[in-house]
Amino acid sequence: DTGVSQDPRHKITKRGQNVTFRCDPISEHNRLYWYRQTLGQGPEFLTYFQNEAQLEKSRLLSDRFSAERPKGSFSTLEIQRTEQGDSAMYLCASSHSGRGNEKLFFGSGTQLSVL
Amino acid sequence: QKEVEQDPGPLSVPEGAIVSLNCTYSNSAFQYFMWYRQYSRKGPELLMYTYSSGNKEDGRFTAQVDKSSKYISLFIRDSQPSDSATYLCAMTTQGGSEKLVFGKGTKLTVNP
Image (cartoon, rainbow over all chains, first blue to last red; front, side):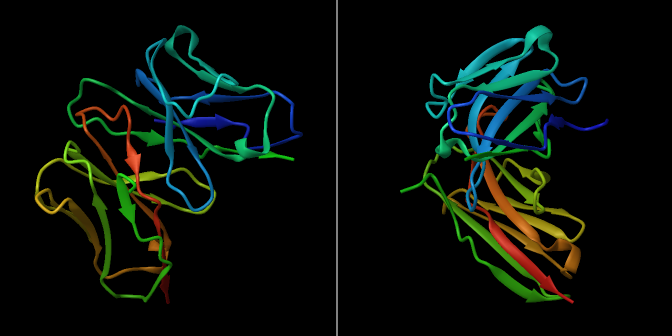
């Protein structure tokens, strides 16, 4: 396994700009998750996909956030009209459902700073 | 009241000490419990996964779950400086990990 890969590692943007992050999961994993982590807090669930279907979205995911997973492989998370409150670490994780003890494997995250 | 409570520390111990990390939770529907380790500027790394009350041991790590008290613990024996990290407890109501609920994390420093 090459692990979960996220790009970019860091992103600095100005308030009001749009940003997009990419996540490449572990190749045989059919589930992909997005979490957000702010300083001093644990990760908070945003959304998850099983294959290409987005199965659940958190109330934290406002209309400015959109996630896609075309073809059930990599995923993108876009934030439109960024706000300073969007500054956080955005974590992607993947897992394989149906194996019983499902375990999430996280990437190193994308650190977003909105100025 | 948050669903999962975890003392953020920081916790500082000498090398070789036994470390005890704890979380309490309020939702009795939580059935699956995990401990993750997170180094600075990295993603969380799964350490332990348990789904029943009792103890589970893996090397120097022991995870303990007491569902009747809604209390989970992670013990680290013979702690090493390389154990210095933030330790996050996480739990979910379902067999899959669709929506893990995390604690805030406890920052641990092991001093040589």
